Amino acid sequence: MTAFPGVLLLGMENAIALTVVRELGGHGVPVHGIARSATSIGAASRHCADWTMRPAGPIADWLPGLIARTGARAVLAISESDLIELAALPPMIGDCHLLVPRPEPLGRVLDKLQTLHAAAVAGLRVPQTWQPRAGEDFAARAAQMRYPLVAKWANPPDIMAVLAQAGLEWIKTDYVRTPDELVALLHRYAPVGRWPLIQQYCRGVGLGQMLYMQDGQATLRFQHRRLHEWPPEGGVSTLCRAEPADAHGAQMALSEKLLRALDWEGQAMVEYRYEPDSGRYWLMEVNGRFWGSLPLARHCGADFAWEAYRRKVLGRTDVAPPPRDDVRALHGAGNQAAGARPAGARPHRRSLLPPSPAIRPRQLSARLFRPACSLLCLQRFRRGALAARHGTDRQESRAPGKALTSAPIARSIRAKQVAI
Picture 1 (cartoon, rainbow, N blue to C red):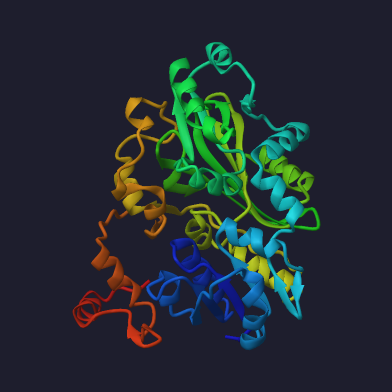
Picture 2: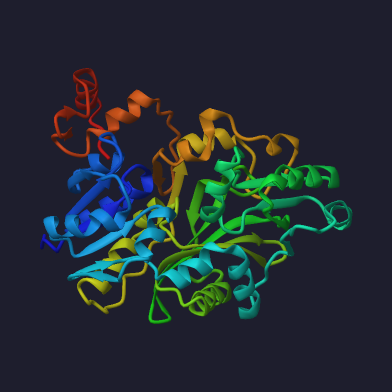
């Protein structure tokens, strides 16, 4: 296979990064990972040509030198925080492309209020939304609302540090059932004088439409339906399936229209709550980074990282092959957490409590999606078993100065003949 110019990938710690590494490596693109830990799963892949421990300090301080040292022609990132830092840099450093959105479109996508406004203008259905402000009569407003409600922050990266400084936990989504609960939630954030968005709860199932945009046009499309989520009202996808390309066609056109209105370039997922009985689609948000169910897209042949690379770095304009639509992906640990409750279930009292430490979303994201066409396998991975899988993707899994796998684990790997 032809060797292409290399890519620097920031963030090697989860299944999303592992998928990007595999995808690019499978196309012959050498990937140099920037990892926060010697045990980062992406660095253990045989498709990771090399990796570097992430230097301290802002990205702008060390990225140019790393590009010069590695000869990379492209930079990709997994997390929103890294996208924000990279977006502030020039789109190219030397002859290296920073494959990230520009600051203005990224800001619009990260701010849910701006996204919802643009969506309403573009003709999409958006949930009723209230942004509480200082000086409002919260009790009176709470008495007028229709329940249940959902509370989520308009711009999570912008508020996280503010909450942390005040000793308050950032909660991605809160479900509110009564006026008293809403008043209590708003009172919680009074010390910082900022409050989450309050939205109507939209029933239905999660539907994600993924597009790669270039010059206002989608060059790659893929979509999936969430069959299980945790929490079931809307959260981490734990079981999802590819949707046929000819399904939801009018909504896919609206998704493309929205991204065009946002002046978006690159990959994005437009997330909806879809009501099959009524045919209504409620916009939830636009995800401008690589998403958690990316493994499903890859196993269907919708290679979004490769699409970005081949178009920007190689200058190719040929049409991407159509993806498959007969694959499901199972998020093993998350699906066990979700249990038998289907996606789209109405919130109940237990769902108002945060998940136990064993099933918090950040830990779930470190688990692997298990693809299958007709048979779904559910396996339990303890830390030792997962570590064993890390070392099987390359013949020698060694970090500088230390082994990634112990001798007992290595023997277990050889015995089980598993590979990732």
